[in-house]
Length: 379
Image (spheres, rainbow, N blue to C red):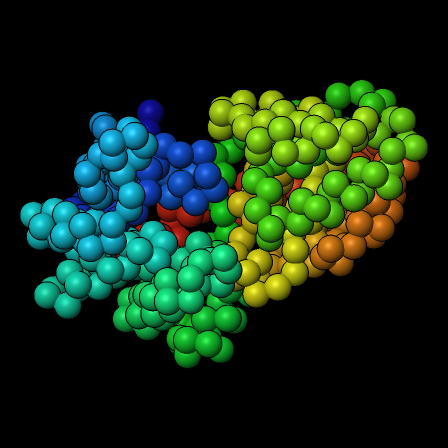
């Protein structure tokens, strides 16, 4: 029989349930990108505690209010995103909802959130920065990068609280945007521990080295390809590379690599569990220092040793968890040596590292941990 709640507990629960939180996300929550997945997981954690309303460009119609951002194109491709149209649609929805908290996820979401807060200054604005957009848009026109840089700055300066992805991102915001440290809350990527479960790795050989994610320039994927070439003589070592179009790399003739292509989110845990170790060799530079490698949370949750580059908070996490090795970014020889070190390691020690990773995820990356942290930020 469950113990009855005390008066203070019932009051606390009633206050939480009465709090109205509006999420703004200027993309489709159903997409399989790290940004959409993190937003979806965050909303999932918060919906259990608060009255939650979600304004996005798509997602589960049971709990997402979809905004359109332009007219359908003649070629039936998705309509081009229009910032002002998005803002025009979002503002009246916010007026109707009258939220006490607005949780704006990514740079563009800051525009309607800031305009609403200007009209309603007592609304608490939480700005979640998945990266610094003007740094990520290196191939965009300078004026476009300037606009996004201004939006990053205004969102960071005028919000009541910032959800940062890493301590290195927090340091950047303090140095470049002059944001006080008390305003910045670092919340590493949350992970659904029920979806990403631990199970012991399969027997080896083959010794499977895994990577899951996209192949954008900041991921360090070229370093993985060069490492594959360096280790081709080791017939017991095989690479399983997931999450991007394989046709880009099938012509490289890498006999020790399998490219799976994109995978549905629910299939990723099983593929990660086939691996003995997992890689996050992100490139160095300002882009990666202002991000968090979302894949790292999944790696830790499935309980595998990790080799990560000395970028963002990866060295801090691997040291705290005691679950892997850190290598310099962009150094394929160092990555190859680290793989060989774990390959030659005793199975008992590798299992210990993997179980350390899972324990760290349970303590620091669960949905409950995220929900508790956001409750404090909202209140």
